[in-house]
Each structure stands twice: as C-alpha cells, then as structure tokens.
Image 1 (cartoon, rainbow, N blue to C red):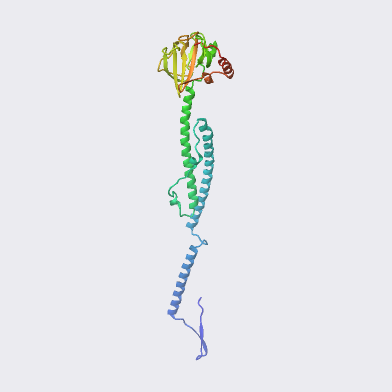
Image 2: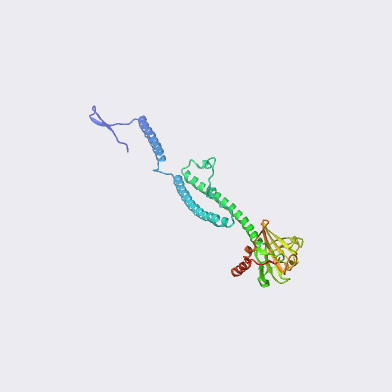
Length: 325
C-alpha cells in the first residue's frame, strides 16, 4: 500500500494531503517495470552462465553424459579382458603352433603396430570427452588389427597342418615286411660283404629274409612310379614316390599287386617276396631315398615297431655281415 504524504499549510495552520500527479505516477510505475525487466534479464543471464541453476534438459543431458562415461569405462574393461585373451592366443600361436609346424613366429611389433599417416581421429576432437572417445577408438582398432593378424596366422597354421598331415602319411614309416612273416633281418645299411664277389661294398638298403610269397607292404602313402625289372640287379621291383622328396624301393619281388601310376596307402600289399635279379635267396631288399640320395631306412620304422623290436633290429642291422644281393 502506497504511503500517504502531507504538507503543513501556514495559511490554514493545518496539514493537507499531497495528491500525486497522475503523470508522475505513471512514470514511476514505468520505471519500476523497466528496472525489474533489466534486473531479471541480467539475473537470468548470470544464472544461465553458471552451474548454480540447470534446466531440466541440461540435467537430462548431464545424466546421459555420466551414463556414457560409465559405458566407456565398462567397454574399456571388456577390451582389456579381450586383450588378455588375445595375448594368450598370440603367445601359444608363436611358441606352440608355429614352432611345431616350423613357421617363423610373428614379431610383436608386427602384431601391435599402430596406424601411421594422417590424424585418423580428427572428427572426434573438440568435445568435452574427446580423450576418452579417442582412447577407446584407438584400442578397439588395435584389437581389430591384432585379430586380423592372428586370423591370418591361424589360416597359415591350418594350411601347414594339412601339409603336415600329408607329410606324416607320406613318409615311409613302417616296416615293409610284417614281423610275423619275417625270418630275420639279414643285412642292414652300410658296408657289407658282397655275396657273389665277397668284396666289401656299401649296401644302400636293408635285406629282410622271408619265405617266397610273403606279402610286401607300402611303407607310406604315394604313387607307384615303377613296377618292372628294367633296373640292373633289382629284378622285379617297385618304386613309390611319396612326395616331399621321399621314394621307397622294393626289390627282388616274385610278383606285383600294383601297376605304374597307381596310388597306394600305407599298409597296402604291393607285391610278394621273391629272389629275382641279383639275389642269393628269397628276401626283400628295401631302400629309402630322400631328395635323390639313399638314406638309412632304419630311421623310418617308428610306425610299426615297439621300442624293444626297434632295438633288436638296430643291433642286427649294425652287424657287418654278408648281404643277400
């Protein structure tokens, strides 16, 4: 309620009420509203530019931002766990798989190499949480690259494993005459006395004494490249190309069970013991070739002999006696 003002009238010796002018009253009201408007506007500007008061939208955005920060933190923890698992796979890949299959380990620098060149994260800069976003993006891309490298390595290992499987099946790894049919291991690889000239000469195979007609087995998977008697001294003989540089030869046979060009598996019967060619008695002369050089066949019987049988054969093969061819 507005205050009532009075003045002292000396003429009437009394107090009279001061009546405000209508125009001045309007001006006062107008000034009050103008001042209130400017003060309110100034206060609003100050409040909007401080953290004292937030609008509902700003409060909602702040909550969303906090949630995003929490999600990024959880994402980084999950990526750290994935990184640990991947590191374990990489270690096994280098130290077990690639080592077993004789492949060179992948250097750590190649697995963890970054991305050079232009700034890949320029569009992520300029925000309040740019560092968090960029760091998470970098880690994710590094994990992706390491996974690609590891995937290619496993593809290579798979291919090497398939080749290894073929190699293990192809290597002439069993005795070509079964122990139950074997009379004795007559002569081994090395210097021996020739049965015809009695001159000491190098014997490039192993002689297995067995009755005529005893089955002879392919010592590894391969392809028959020869089944004839057109090689001096060997008589009726078979040669199997196993691939990977390996060839096995079976000589002095009585007859064949295979023909040239035929594919055979380890353990297939390919012929029978005889005494054709330059032979003193029924036996199988067996040779193993690697890269066009004849090597000691005794190193390739791990697929059919026990340790005791192998030791007995090793003792017999090491004796410098007379060969049968």
